[in-house]
Image (cartoon, one colour):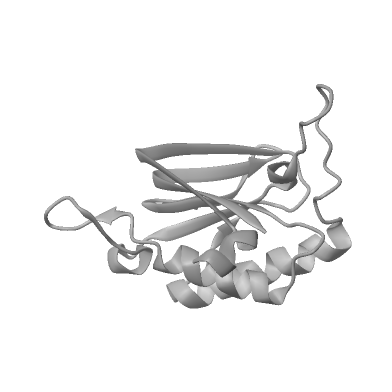
Length: 152
């Protein structure tokens, strides 16, 4: 499972012109699910995202986590995070999980992040053609991969 976490001052997602999710300060998270991922990956990654201290404290240092600022999360499914570009110019997405596996793990991530935040997580629509807008704050962008969890 791979996540690109961007600290934002605001973010939103539209599908067919309708807003499916919008947030103020917090994280916009692109989430890619791989065929080998399971519930343990969701639990680990949700905890890491919730505990990520990248928000400024009274001294301007990145010491606060999202719950410290009462921030929000916009979670967007993003199978292209597993693009393989080694051969040719057309990416292969063979490592990305198929919807029957990816959707339940994505939905579990929504539940787990909501539990960590103590409030609902905003979302896009899995598999839809989404238009995502954000104002990256900093910019701060962090990439996490559950394949690296044994090293953390």
